[in-house]
Image 1: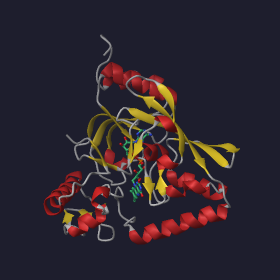
Image 2: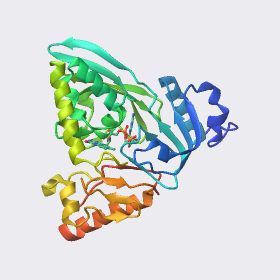
Image 3: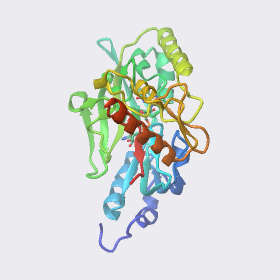
Image 4: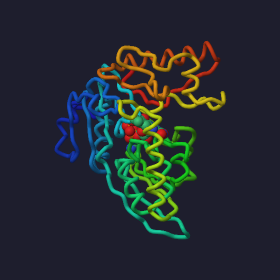
Length: 316
Ligand SMILES: Cc1cc2nc3c(=O)[nH]c(=O)nc-3n(C[C@H](O)[C@H](O)[C@H](O)COP(=O)(O)OP(=O)(O)OC[C@H]3O[C@@H](n4cnc5c(N)ncnc54)[C@H](O)[C@@H]3O)c2cc1C
């Protein structure tokens, strides 16, 4: 902390002239999560450029306040108590998509972290960028997809990533990492920690007849619509598949009798029971209670440990 300077959250107010992004105070996290759940963030910063990230780095260093990172909130369960520090929301940092051209049959596409996957899929279906179909139906941001190594039955982010630009909130360093320098595993990117931000990434895709890409995307969307409760707020799959048990997480939840089980307005969906849906006005503690109940029953009845895919924000 800088001696004599503004302290705590005041730093961000007093130095705000140097910030081009948005500063929101006591901002309900329910407005920023797909679950529509979450109490207020004391301060929310929405950076619009890399310069803004350098400013945030200085502020965090000088003020010593705690912080958390949010993409567009499609895989986040925020606490009913909100968050007492700074939430950095990366929905407006970089929304650009750039075609870097083709060589040896591979086209390279640079995407800002804030690009919505649905936007990218629209571009992919007009450009015939066939490899992006593996993200079909994932509602998050490109940065979130890298951070989560998001994927579907068609593959995962690691399969198409070529390089990533990351910003370290603690050191203030902006670094480019090649695919070889990144360790991905199931829904994990080891280099994206709680204090590193994905700024942009380069992906490689095969190019094909755009009609084929569009057809596959539409078929997958139709299949997901038929099998997932996408009409209700959720975070998608709550638990990772316990692959060592040879089961899908939804099968475990079904076996322990939790399909359709409800705690207040939170429910293990009848349609796809690895989704916990918000039936209207659900609280984070109700979602947590369902998560804990599933873990307990899976352990006691089947000897299976369930691990969360959903990320928590603001829980003690
Ligand atoms: C209906 C529905 C269906 C879904 N289906 C799938 C699916 O098929 N496959 C799948 O993998 N996921 C799925 N998800 C989950 C979710 O969409 C993905 O995990 C997505 O990649 C999260 O992106 P986000 O921007 O919303 O991340 P957030 O929820 O905002 O954040 C999730 C995590 O990523 C971190 N993060 C986000 N952006 C950045 C960034 N730029 N830099 C550093 N860290 C960052 C956050 O700190 C947090 O730890 C689904 C969700 C819903 C609601």
